[in-house]
Image 1 (cartoon, one colour):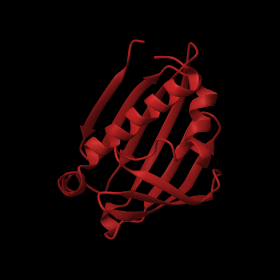
Image 2 (tube, helix red, strand yellow; image 1 turned 30 degrees about the vertical axis):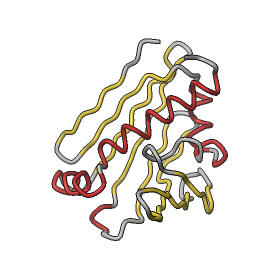
Image 3 (cartoon, rainbow, N blue to C red; image 1 turned 45 degrees about the vertical axis):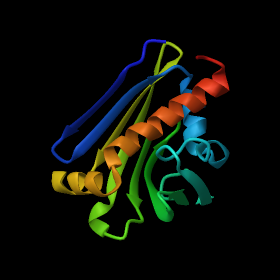
Length: 159
């Protein structure tokens, strides 16, 4: 499979783009179902416990990420849900409110595959740099999408 994998930082926006060798409906399902998302969400070595997850506009996903020797409380509040094309949400839970950010995830069908574009908007570029220094946030985001891609390969049998 030819991979389309880009990452860029522009001011206070991180953009990850991936071409996933799986149908859009499946990618949506593994992103919005707690039984699937626990298998891949988070950087390498992390695990996940979902307290509650309702993927609808105005609802939320409360979860705990376990890694780096501690538990990380997280909350995602869905601002806009358009199945199977868009998830837009506010991500919170950090000790410092400045670390909260918004995300838009676009799922585009391209010939039986899915072009995934994930844009994370932070309060400033300085916040991105600080998070990257403290918890290796940029690499963690890349690892999370690598885990998604690997999980989809397991599900579809495509290597």
